[in-house]
Picture 1 (tube, rainbow, N blue to C red):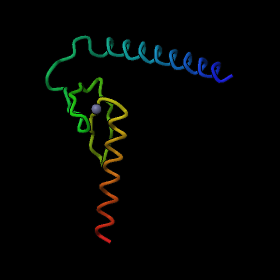
Picture 2: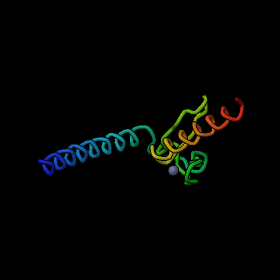
Picture 3: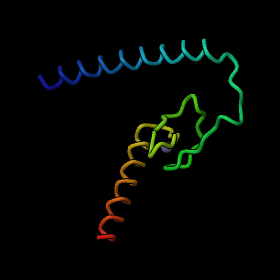
Picture 4: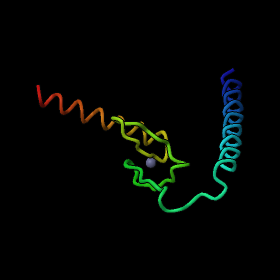
Length: 93
Ligand SMILES: [Zn+2]
């Protein structure tokens, strides 16, 4: 039974991936047929990779927009921020 469940989730995951991919592609071609290069690249503060604003995962941290290459980096950044805040609080008390 375990294998069947695994297969089921694999198929569901694949379908979601394909739908998301198609959605992103159609959106991109509608909005920006010729994306300008240069100004739109942002640096991921976690891993240091450069990402375009279109492809970036945008995180809002303290009212600021920060661009990440992936959700993983966004989550890492938030974790780091929380740890810093916790450390700062423990020092102040
Ligand atoms: Zn990253």
